[in-house]
Amino acid sequence: MEAKNDPELEAAFKSIVSNRIPALLVPADAFFAAARDRLAELTALNRVPAIYSLRESVVSGGLMSYGNDLPDTYRLIGTYAARMGEKPANLPVLQPTKFLFVLNRKTAKALELTIPAGVLSIVDEVIE
Image (cartoon, rainbow, N blue to C red):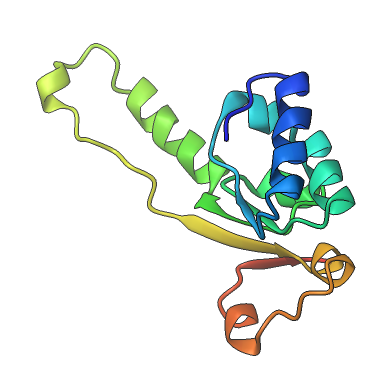
């Protein structure tokens, strides 16, 4: 499904519910990042577990996220900025190297989900 604004987001959730879609993967996207509070609200209201790419979505009430650690990524950007003026061919390709798996236990309980001990053992951060 696709949503680029609030009305499309509402329509997408109506479709999710009517089609009994059991879970949702929310990709990294500027609109979804800005709408993270509304997304958390809609997933809770419609009892749809969702995984996100940003930790901030889990802080807002999303179930879980797996994605690059933003502060670490910003440090990489700073490394590149410090090398401005060098030939592009001399610059290495940098990619995120630190990833975080974040779980919101309160949301899991509200969705009546039991998180297996094996999953809890690999979570980097549990939000209560």
